Structures are given as C-alpha cells and as structure tokens.
Length: 86
Image 1 (spheres, helix red, strand yellow):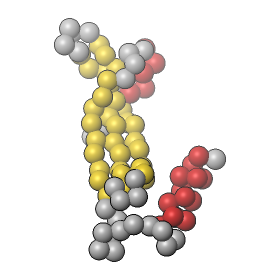
Image 2 (tube, rainbow, N blue to C red):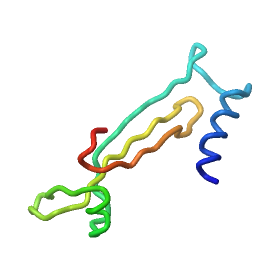
Image 3 (cartoon, one colour):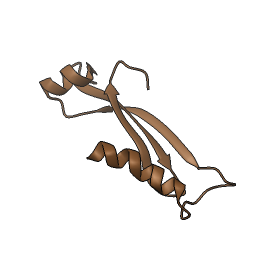
Image 4 (spheres, rainbow, N blue to C red):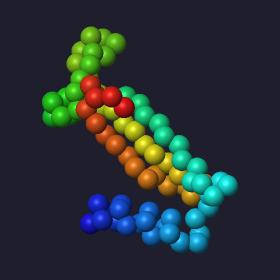
C-alpha cells in the first residue's frame, strides 16, 4: 500500500493546481550522509560497519533524501549499505 501511495500521491499532487513552484519549476533539495544505526549484528550484516572512535565495529548506513522545499514534503528517502556511494 505504501509503495502505491508513494507513487500516486506525488503524481496527483503535482498534476493539481495547489502545487507551489519557483518560476514554474519544483524547488528540490537533495542531501545524503553516513549515519550510525543501532549497533546490532543484523544491522551490521545488512548495512555494513566501520570502526568507531574506540576501535569497535559499529553499524553504519548511507541515508539520502530528496525534499520539495516549497511544498514541504519528501519525494524520496533512501537507506543503503554503508560501502555504497551516496
């Protein structure tokens, strides 16, 4: 259900008349970072790991987002393996 909503809501919204735009274009911002996640064995296996300041293995992941600043919502959020590029 959420995958369907994530596809259909932006299509419906941007096709409507209430969308805010800058000079006729969407004002989007993208950002990404590497973040520490809860340090479980499963997270280290799925998302990868690196050493923390104390030299211990810590679960890490790449996180990225695409944000529509004028309309105030995220169009896309990604969580990927730590070793993959952002």
